[in-house]
Length: 333
Ligand SMILES: Nc1nc2c(ncn2[C@@H]2O[C@H](COP(=O)(O)OP(=O)(O)OP(=O)(O)O)[C@@H](O)[C@H]2O)c(=O)[nH]1
Ligand SMILES: [Mg+2]
Image (tube, rainbow, N blue to C red; front, side):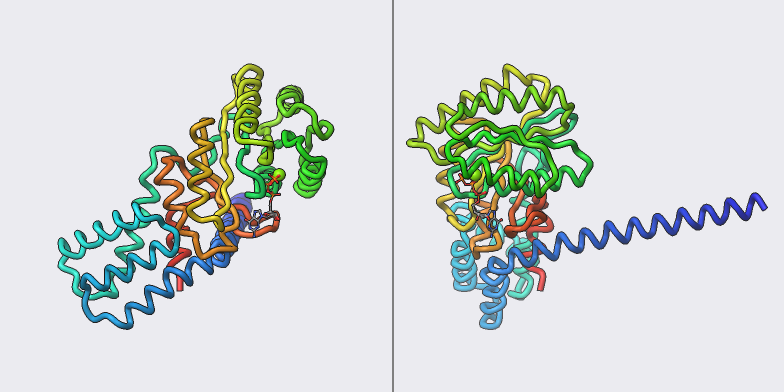
């Protein structure tokens, strides 16, 4: 009787395990499907175009590489990295004595993954152990507030206690927009009036995070100030408050850049990198562009890992960046 009981229990547990595995698999399939959908324009710009040139070549020659080079540059991978990719591919083709142009696609995937994995720090968000603070910076319109909303929902779903601070006090609408996202994500928010000192908002945010025992405090900042010097001064003031008031917190400084601006995103990122210690990049609006190759340029030229990617406007359209999945999504037929 007891044995039967145990056996049944075991079966029950196994069944539960299978359901959980299936749920995780389903969820991952969902994530990958979203990424794939979000990258469809980039996929058209890289994979489809490569398929087109493959129809015209029987052997791999200089002209073939020239066409491939043009495709990669058009996808905003950047001239420097494209040159590196083409040289590496030429070497590999020689070394492995590859004749068939069709083999280039898997070589290219291998190469892109290698480049994307070639950063010193991880692509995962650094928010362990609690408490953690995430400062979100970037010029206006790139998607800071939206990404904070999506990230709050994502972290909450993962079981974290999230608090957000409305550090963009430049416009009343910015505070309202963040409040709306906080409601949607079901997290608490600390805000002051329009025109208040952003550093004071962050100060209150930190005190609230401490007393409410939040796991993660996410801070919005303004992207739209009178000039660059003002913006950088304001950010530095915020950083000083965080250093002084929350030394025990793990810190992430996420720079949000808009993928649709292509190489401009890199220029912006370089300016911010000079002023603050950026620890990760959030690349938004990948769904709206064929310039998804900019991921490689951003990460390599700045030597800062891409940590999150935005693939749509909805609450679950922000994903952790996985180099392998990204490359797979670009080439998945
Ligand atoms: N398609 C798409 N749209 C996005 C994505 N991320 C943000 N957006 C849109 O970009 C627009 C600007 O987003 P915000 O979050 O307001 O940008 P912000 O950086 O906070 O802008 P400021 O507060 O003005 O500095 C909104 O219409 C968002 O819906 C994305 O991944 N995909
Ligand atoms: Mg905003």
